[in-house]
Image 1 (tube, rainbow, N blue to C red):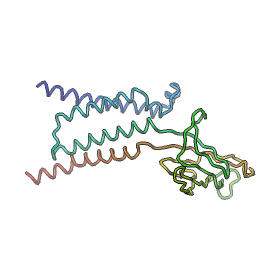
Image 2 (cartoon, rainbow, N blue to C red; image 1 turned 135 degrees about the vertical axis):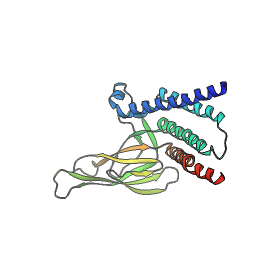
Image 3 (spheres, helix red, strand yellow; image 1 turned 120 degrees about the vertical axis):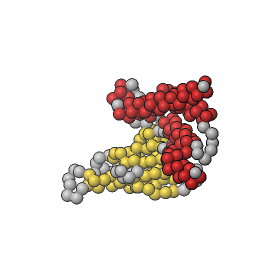
Image 4 (cartoon, one colour; image 1 turned 90 degrees about the vertical axis):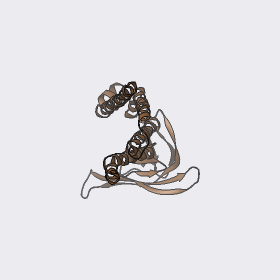
Length: 239
C-alpha cells in the first residue's frame, strides 16, 4: 500500500512539473514585455535557474517512476517515450545554455572570424573566416525604393583545415556551415557606395543540441506509436 502511494506521488509530481514547465514556456514565449522589464533575453529566460530546477525535477520524477515499470515488450512504448523526453530535455538544456546569437559586419573583399552580441559588449569566435565576395540589393521590377532581396556571396574558410566554400545568404535563405546560420540582416543602404564602403550585416547564430532534441522527439513519437498502435496488435496476435 505504501509503495502504491509513493508511485502515485511521483506520477503526480511529474504531471505537475510538466504543467509548470508548460506555463513557464508560455510566459517566456508569449510575454516579451515581461522579459524586457526583467532585462532578460529569451535565451537568458529559458536558461534561468527556475527552468533548470523544473527540468531537474522532471528528470528525477521520470527516473523514480521507472522503478515500478518493468522493461518488457508491453512497456517498451512507455520506456521509449520517457527516454525520449529525457533526451529531449538534455537537448533543450544544451540549446539554451550554449546557444549564442549576434551580428557580424563584413566589408566587401574583407573577412571576419568572430561575431558580437547586439550591443557589441561580448564576442565569440567562429570556426571559419567569412569573407564578403559580392553583395547585391535587388529591387522589385519597376520599383524605385522597394527591395525584393539582399544577396551576400560569402567565402568561408575553415580555420583548421583551410577548406574553402562559397555560399549565399539572402532574405529568408540563410547560409549554413559548421553548425552556424548566417542570416542576411542589413547593409550599408547606399547604392552609390564605393567598394571600400560596401558592407553587409549578418545575424550569426549557432544551434547546439538540435540533433539531440531531434533524436528525443523521434523516440517520443515512436514510443507513443508503439504504445497505442503496435502493442494492441501484438496483444491480439498473442491472445
